[in-house]
Length: 203
Image (cartoon, rainbow, N blue to C red; front, side, top):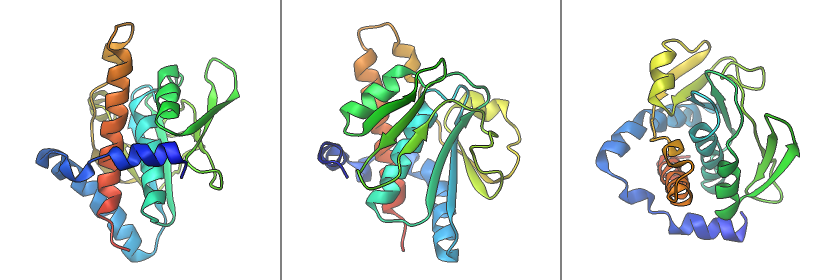
């Protein structure tokens, strides 16, 4: 893990998250633990409306947390109910928190490679529908990161388990002086919760 990212991780206080959030995260912990106990790969698809902000933060931090706690065969994905683009501030915030982020394509829907370590495959970030061919088609947990997607998608084809873990949209701060602080705060909140989840997994 990159040193700057390691510093960010060391600043997280995942054991101190609120009790109600720990209860919200318990179904995800149980899903992952069962897969580990059964010796099966763990596929997690983080879903929000536009696949532009929260779902990418959750995908990236969950993959980093799995690596940090050496939980094997974890594959993290993300998707939306519609395709838009990764909001540029997401790439900026992740880079400031220690990930190496670089653009693979410069298009209306850019593709990013996001790395937490030089010797691991990058996380590929771009906006796509949750049922894109890029994502798993069965046996995965669908983690609903926004209430709009949770309410608007009563059925996720192929999902073995559907788990609502919603976060406030940092979009509310766009074009305001608070934007930097809000995006940083939301990223760190998601990081703490994903690290809490993987810290509870027994190998």
